[in-house]
Structures are given as structure tokens and as C-alpha cells.
Image 1: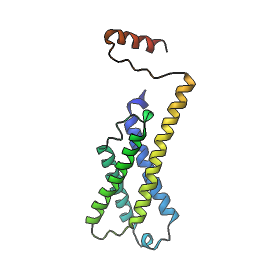
Image 2: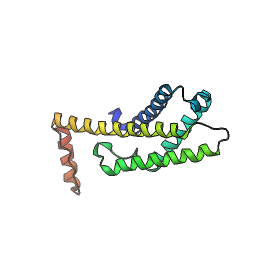
Image 3: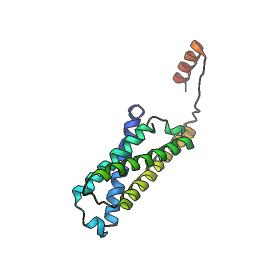
Image 4: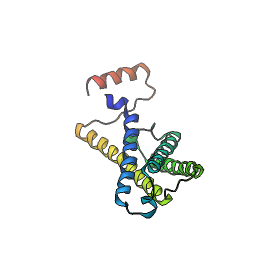
Length: 162
């Protein structure tokens, strides 16, 4: 029950974890990159936080955390991609104004692209899990539209006798 109420916060937290882990992984994979080797960790951490902030702002603007991902169709996935592209463009606009910032754009673009793919993968896994869970327990989603008090009684009956 707590997971249902905190779904939005859990998805946001997992998105942050994916982005941070991918950026650390890329830094570990390419440690001898000349442009990254000359950077201090402070500059890299600041860039990662700006990337996270701009990505999360754009995802909130596109309302990707409000939709129910268990019923996700292509529209939700396209909105996530569009929000990701917008978030990266916001990041670029912010980083351009910071003097002395020389983190390679290709590095941040690859980090953000791979983390966006991870976010999509996480949502696809959630959808498949919900589909599998529903088939195991034999529940079929039901919508009661315009039934008034009879609909309320039907809902109570369905909830008490699944």
C-alpha cells in the first residue's frame, strides 16, 4: 500500500540513481580521456548535479511522473524521450553560461543518453511486471463508468470478494 502512494517518489529516486550510476560508470570506463583527466572532481560533480536538475525539471514539465506506467503506451515513452531531450538542452544552456567549464559535451550527452535508456528500461520492466502479476493472480482491470450508487455498490462488492 505504501508503494502505491509513494510511486512517484520511488520512480524519481530510481531515475536519479540510474543517472548517477551511469555517470560514475562512464567516468570509470574512460578514466584516461585527456579532457576528463584534466578535470577536478568538483567540476564533474557540479555538472552531474546540473544534469540531474535540468533533467528532472523537464520531466516534471512534461508530467512523466504523473502518468500510470503500467498502462504506458507509445505516447508516454515519447513524452519521456522528449522530456529527456529538453532536459539536456536546458543543461547545455546552463553550462554555456558557467565560465571555465570544460567537461566534454560528448561525455555528458552519452551519460544522459544511456541513463535515459535506463529510465525507459525501468518503466518497461515495471509494465511487464504488472502484466505478469495480473496474469498470475487472475485479476482483470475493470472500469465502472456512470453507474452512480450501483457502481459504488459494485465496487465495494468487487473489493470485498476479489
